[in-house]
Structure formats: C-alpha cells, structure tokens
Image (cartoon, rainbow, N blue to C red):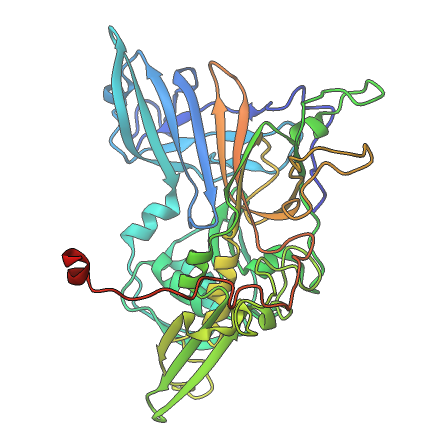
Length: 477
C-alpha cells in the first residue's frame, strides 16, 4: 500500500472533501415505484463517523437543523436507511454508504432534540452498519469445524449476512466450536481470544470494520507482512505550521495533510495497571480435567519480547526497562504478580484444538496491555485513505532547549512508528466546511532502547528504622 496516496493537484486545501447528497430511505414506499429518497443535505450541519479496533462495526451521528419537520413528514422511526458517500478528492478509499455501489447505514436513534427558534429544531441522528442491527436480531446455535478463521468467515457471511469485503488473517487453530445460542459477534470474540496466528508466535485476534470492510487480524499482522518485514508507514505526522507551498513555491498539500494541529499523550506508562494485568510477568496454572494433572507456566516479558513482532524493529526496545529491580531480579522475575487459573483438556475432539483456553493467553494479555502503555491522540486534516489497524509515524517534539542547530528536535523515545486504534472523522457542512480527524495512536516499543543497569540501586537505600507502636499506648503518653 503506497505511502499517503494523496493527490497534490486535486486537493485545494487540507480538509477538502467530496460528499454526495445525503438521503434518507424510508422503510415504506412513497410516490412512484422504486426506492424513495428524501434528500436532507441542506439540513445537515455536521456529521461524524467512528472507526475503532475495539468496535466491530462502523457507526456515526449527524446533526440536523430542521425547518420542515422531517421527523413527522417522513416519518422517522429508527428503521430508515441513510445513504451518502464521503471521499477525499483523488482518493479511492472512502465511505460508500450508497445503495448501488456500497452499503447504506441504518438510522437507529434521535437524541438532543431542541427548538432553535419558531418552527426550527435541531437534533442528532444516530446511525450504524446494518450488520450491527443484524447482530442483535440473530442468535447462533451451531457447530463449526475447521480452522477458526473459517468459522469467523462463516459467521460474517451466513449469520451477519454481510456482503462487505472481509480481510482475514489465517489461523493455525483447528477446532470444533459450538456457538451456544449467542450473537454472532459474541461467537467471533470467543474465537478471536483463543485463536493462534498461522504466521506469528502469538494469539488473540481483533475483529473490526473500516471503510474497506471487515477485518480479522492479529496485532502482529498489522505491524508487519507475512515474512515479518515491518509494514511501510501510511503517513508521517508531526506538529508543524501548515504550509501550502514548498521551498520552490509549488503547492505541497501532502505535507499540509500531515500537519498535527494539536496532540496530547493520554498515557505514557502506568506501572500499577501493568502489574495488575500481568504485562511484566505472570503465572498460568492449568488443570487438565481429563488427565487429572496440574501444570504451571510462567511468562517473562523480557524473555518473550524477542519472540514477537513489534512496531519498532530490533531487540531490547520494549516499554519495560531491563534493570536490577530488587535483590538481583528484574521486574519480569515476579510471576506471582498475576496468576491465571485455567481449566481444560486438550484433544477432547481427537486432533482438534480445545477452545476452552488459549495456549498463550498470558502473551495475548501482556501484548494488549503493552500496547496501551503509550496512547497518543492527534488532531489532523481529514483523509479517507487511512484507516484503523494501519501504521503511521509520529515525530514527537523534544521540549528541550537545542544547544546545537544540528540537533534533532524530536523525542528519541516517543517519536517513531504507531498503530492507529481509532479515528473520528468530523465533517462540517455549514460553518467550517472542513473534514478533520481525531486519531488515537498506540505504541508497544520505543525507537531507542531504554537504558539498562545491573546495579541494585533500591535495596538498602530506604530507612530501615521503622518501629511498631500501640495506638493505645500513644493515647496514654
């Protein structure tokens, strides 16, 4: 996939967008035969589209200023379809919610209805993918046999009845899975948490939707391709003054599209949270019911780090420093920090894997928690050619005085490759007439290794003269 495939000639300024007529398609027919469309483009003040790795479906909301009482004239009941297309000029990727070439969204609610002035009201329409509604209408009670990615594909095509693209990473987990009368997405989540990648040494998949369709992938397949080579970054974002011209005076829209107007680090580290989740170390106690055995396995972050793929290529770039924490032990030498209790039996169905547990659940939990170590949020111009699950580069300023003009003005740890975990597209039609994005980025490794040290700087350094006292004796003193 090419790096930031934006058109430098078709985009007049950052935030340009192409929007077709916004139509509401009622569930009933009105007038001549065929689909009846109520055009509401003139009533739309702004709208938002939400993408997230943590959300199986696209959804959004649209603010309307209504002076013709659309709510009662259509009428709106929450069963209408919403139709429009949103694209960045010159970009093929975008959001096609049309009937003929795409997949309309479904209106599901109205909120914040208020009177602006006499006979003029405003309200927010909520909408989502049709599959979201189908998921709530459907329960799955059937057995699936084969690889778990085949089961997910069947759930998407047969149970969610989706005609959208499905981009899927193959699994090596071959199992018999019985969906116990649950919603399709619930079944997919069960399979996702227990499936192991065919190409990478991990487990745990993400199921999510973007403008290109549904995706079923591991984090490592988002970081790199099948051979393990890091995927090229899709954009290079950095805080800078927006310039429409380069040094020669030519238009440089691509540079302007990658200018960050505002950013904030939502999390940089959270030691207590990582201890609670078992990011650094954990122990798994497995009870085999059939063979009546109990086994213990330990997880060590530093030992496991080199066995996985990460956003930053190279060893010793993890978010957990390697140092003498206490008594000659590193922070990853305390497996009792988090204990996982698992009950299950392998090969219950002959040679099929047992889906009651994952063989690498501790790694999955640690990997996901490590990806929440550094959470960055940026505000950038809108661009429909970029989606969640893709890798971008962010240059974080150093915030220190530069003593030499040749020094790089960036943070050596926080600058680098990030994974997009959520995008909020905001499109203003009346006031700003601009498309902007709020993008959340995460990072599981640094561009530069953290310092290492074998010297114990903690043991014996604190006051060891603490005494115990009786509260009542203190009261009598």
